[in-house]
Amino acid sequence: MFSSIPSSILMKKMYFKPLATIDVIASIVGALTSLYLAMNNYNYWAIVFGGMSINITKMLMLNIYRPLFLKPRFSYKEAKPFLNFGGFVMISGILWYIYISMDILIAGKFLSREELGVYSVALQLAVLPLNKILPTLKQVAMPAYSKVQTDKTTVNRYVLKSLSLAMFFTFPVFFGLASVAELLIPLVIGDKWNMAIIPFMLLCFIMPLRMLLELYIPAVNSIGKPHVVFKNELFILLFLVPTFLIGINWGTTGLAFSWAAVFPIISVIVSINYCKVLKIKLSRITKIIFTPFIFSVIMFISVKLTIIFCSKLINGWFLLTTAITLGAGVYILFIYIDDKRLLQEYRNILFKK
Image (cartoon, rainbow, N blue to C red):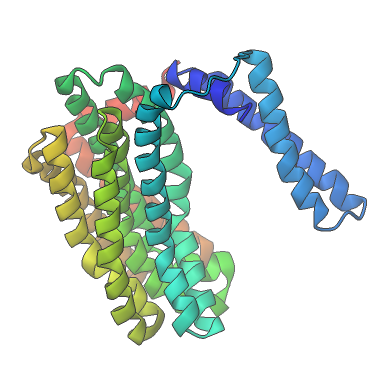
């Protein structure tokens, strides 16, 4: 609780550099603490105290950088609007966590230990890029939208811009991973995990759509409509559970196929709901998705053909590197032909001082 107020103030003012610096220092302290305790035979307590040291370090540094001491006031009337808003956000977050974990829960009930292990590995590998990219985007998006929440035109422009940049980046990343799955998984985690290749590919195909739905949320919350997010998260959960229960009859592949089969439908319905609230035409979202999707499909086919024709000449890491390089080159070439300004925008984002 001593971290939340200074952290929220820095986030609201979009002071992300000090927040990032504090996070890095706290992570280093936690790693060193865990290492020291592990080397001195503290066993599992090394993990416990290492995690605690991260939070303690973060709390101390936040209060040093942005000290703020307030006397508590207990007023339900003052807190009511924040409780209403925060309640919907909290419940939506719980529903989101349940629906992204429901497949593992169902797999644990109906699959063997080996099958559960295969599916878990495929899922963890597939969501890894998403888990690294999405938290940062959402952290920046919420205060940015909140600053312009009364200007619906600006909010809409930000939404469309962020979706466009995200989709042009996300589709090739996940379709690229799917295209090299048969090389990537044996090389990185070993041949014994080859059964995870097909589930991994299927899960990669729907990750851009998961990113799409997540990027709506900060904008919708910022204009004071968290109940819309709650309704959509509940809808997704209720839609996915029976689908998983059907797909589990065909094992790990059937469970992964459940995502691939129904999540595009879910994405359309949820996008319609969000577009109504944000006053954005669905056709504009479709246009944003269509181009990177088509380019990524072409990239996927070109990489697959490269692997097929070159596998007799080269193999291993060299074949994987060749396939990735070719796929990236094909995708960038198509972007350059279609809209070279997009490449300039990415360059400005990556190298802006």
